[in-house]
Amino acid sequence: MTSSSAHSRKALSKIACNRLQKELVEWQVNPPIGFKHKPTDNLQRWIIEVNGAPGTLYANETYQLQVDFPEHYPMEAPQVIFVPPAPLHPHIYSNGHICLDILYDSWSPAMTVSSVCISILSMLSSSTAKKRPSDNDQYVKNCRNGRSPKETRWWFHDDKV
Image 1 (cartoon, rainbow, N blue to C red):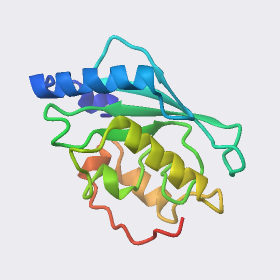
Image 2 (cartoon, rainbow, N blue to C red):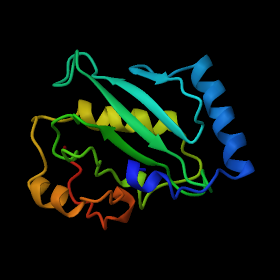
Image 3 (tube, one colour):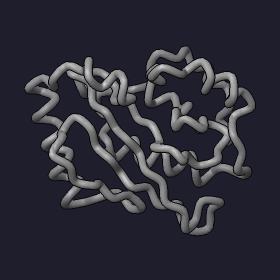
Image 4 (cartoon, rainbow, N blue to C red):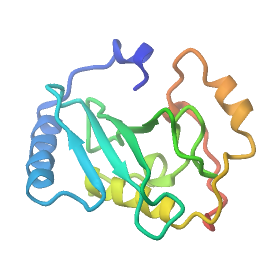
């Protein structure tokens, strides 16, 4: 959640807390390659360091993801954004919002933070050009005042990037 909407966030349900604690333990035992969880005292917001995969356009680059978990996680998808500066990518907006179907319409409660991270790294790794989405400026302008990417009606039409 963006900082302006974080104050209205509801506390995690018992199911969400249990699931996140289980995922956090699994992460500590078997972290996904290329990612590092930055410990905080807030189970509802994770900060994750992303390292670009070797041999890709993003090799030797480091970014941060902010993962905010809703009250009813995993039945509802977490909000995942890059903390600016976001990587230059055709599906990542300069405000950090990510156009990736599993974060929205294709979310499944079987997914985990690790599987989401791996999907994001795969998306980065498969890119052939470092550039912003063609509608970046208009989208970012429309997202002022803390609009969540989960409020966007995404159009998933380009799986080649």
